[in-house]
Image (cartoon, rainbow, N blue to C red; front, top):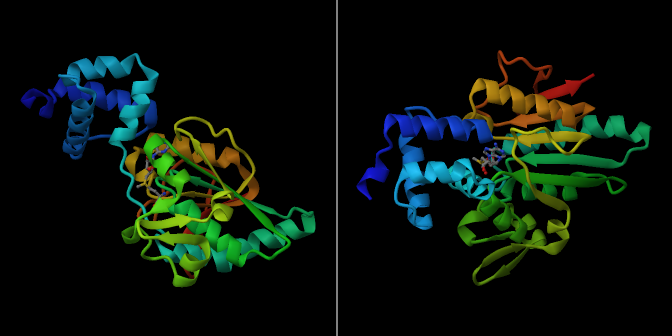
Length: 273
Ligand SMILES: C[S@@+](CC[C@H](N)C(=O)[O-])C[C@H]1O[C@@H](n2cnc3c(N)ncnc32)[C@H](O)[C@@H]1O
């Protein structure tokens, strides 16, 4: 198996190009070892002997390509990740949106968690909106990812105790059922989120979002792929809406129509036409 640890430069180039074309995820020489490590694990699981054979297999097999992309993604996430984003949601974004919607007689807030990983982000948003939206408003959340494994965990909504740190105690009691093995999101909250497979490289099948969260996802793409993804968001958002990206990510210099917004809590972007 030693040969599969070391991709030849040609093989690396073959994988790199295919991954980029299929997902926008951009591997460089700097993170080549991450790809090699994850590929090695996938080869072990699939019983395929060489990286070359596997490259041929995924090139012509859409299902295996999905499994492979799943295997190479980074899925790190947590509940209430970057609290200032949620403070800005409560004290800035929601008041702005509600002030526009009320006179228009629209009482539904629509959110997309794009690149939702194992669900912590959309469940955080769902808890926040359940608590903070006025009672005459309702909300809808779509949560999507490329990783089928992550989506399964997200739909299941079951987390062990090490993963629920960061959730305020009152929310944990109210929105989770506790058992010896861990914490399960209550059905009433799970029912508020629609989890779906979506590759951000493709145009969004959904429209009319008031807020899009795409945090810590763009970092894996190069600028061309980032621009494509962000412009897809533009098309899927209402004429007055907000976009969150990760705190280490930026749209600076990118060819998009989003406007930069600086709030007391954090920075974000808006579509305002
Ligand atoms: C690091 S996680 C971020 C999770 C969450 N948004 C957060 O900030 O905690 C990045 C997620 O983006 C997903 N992802 C990467 N490329 C994608 C693509 N082309 N389409 C959809 N999801 C993608 C990965 O599967 C992964 O679950």
